[in-house]
Length: 77
Image (tube, rainbow, N blue to C red; front, side, top):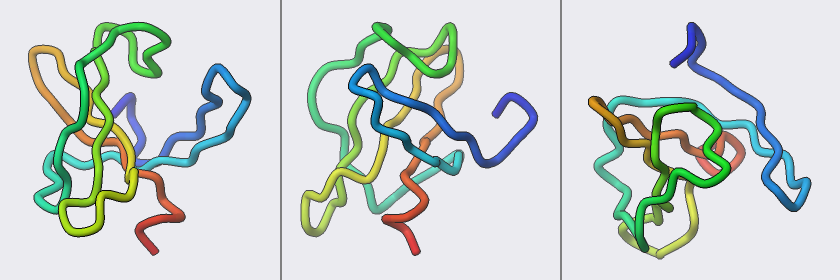
């Protein structure tokens, strides 16, 4: 995404996230509504993604004409 697999962002509370982007994340399940507020990728609405097995927050999916997953790197190691 935007020429890179890995990105670093701050959320509105100042929490820093390093995410990796993937086309698919079969171990994730979406939670809540999509939102375009404070999106890290302009033109994309985001949605929280949880671990399908334990419900831990793993990152976000981003949706526009195409979709992708931005998952928190430290949680995937």
